[in-house]
Length: 88
Image 1 (cartoon, rainbow, N blue to C red):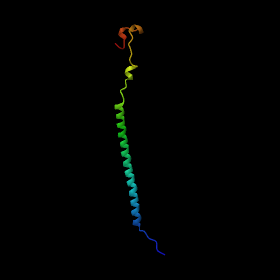
Image 2: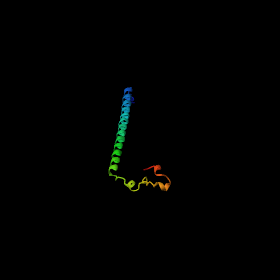
Image 3: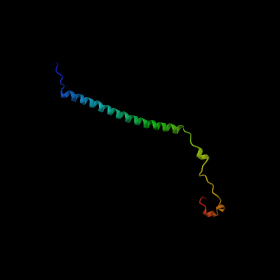
Image 4: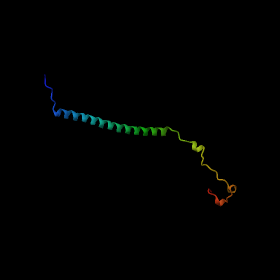
């Protein structure tokens, strides 16, 4: 019967270090890719906002129906004198 092959400790150390290096490298590259993708998403959102702002027509509704447009009533209607007017 042929004797079994005996592997030295250095064999296991080498493959353990190689495996850990690959796993750490993959984690590092994946983390960098995630950061790059987040940055690209932020830039894309800014560009989309700029395009929407440039293409959207100016709102004119508030000019037609201004709810703050008030007429000041003459003082004799609400019982005050001309000196008590808030708006002159």
